[in-house]
Length: 118
Image (cartoon, rainbow, N blue to C red; front, side, top):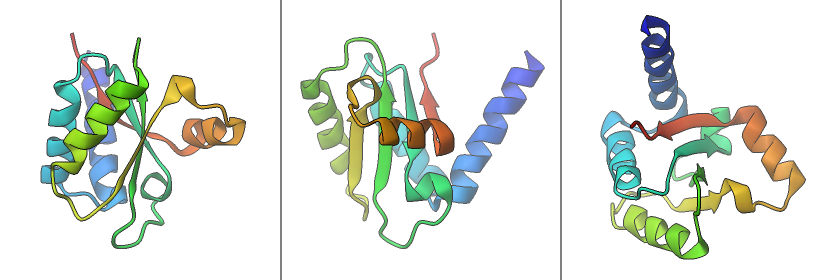
């Protein structure tokens, strides 16, 4: 149990240190995810996951979960835009991605951003 807690803490620190997002921004985004029960986890990818983002870089997030529909992604995207951050969100449903290269990119550089707890 202790190891799992340490891994989560290290992952959380990595998100904040390497992505250019503040603790408050990460918490606000995760609060949106908590309100949507179909989201099982969220993976940050793209320039923020690779650490080569620039000021104003968008936030690329792949959502994983059972039964995520296009309408769910739209609702989640609207909720994230309502946060009024100075970034654009690019939200995709991981299970609906057709591009093999994108899946490989997410699997290779992705940082788990959120995981639903029971």
